[in-house]
Length: 144
Image (cartoon, rainbow, N blue to C red; front, side):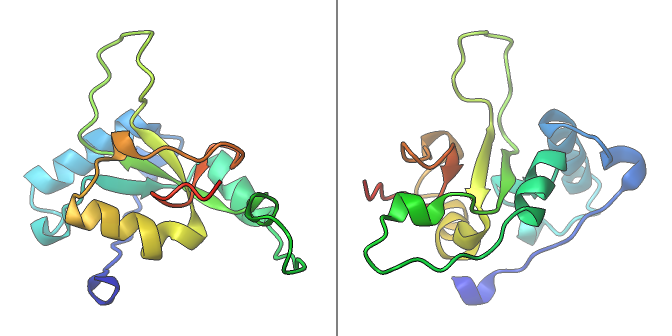
């Protein structure tokens, strides 16, 4: 599955600068409808970088830890990107817990996130960050 990964970079400053997840969903659907984006690359989620995600990328510095260091400590400050569920429709319910977005650790994109999305074994609404990971998703398996 990793070998078939293909990332398509989409940049449209006029439409996407300062866009939120809803604007990105709408833009993605439009690309698919107008066939401006290969249908073979259709996925249930797309990645988004905003100011907060960019800060996580730029502020991240690799750290060396002794082998006995806990996984939670090792994961602190890991860079992440937003994953946006392209099929999520917010109905205005203030009590809705699932927002259709998820912070995904960059280190987990290819090994964990992409296979889950590509196979459809779980939907994004089922993916929950482990407690202690500062709302960043690393994997389906909760090691704590």
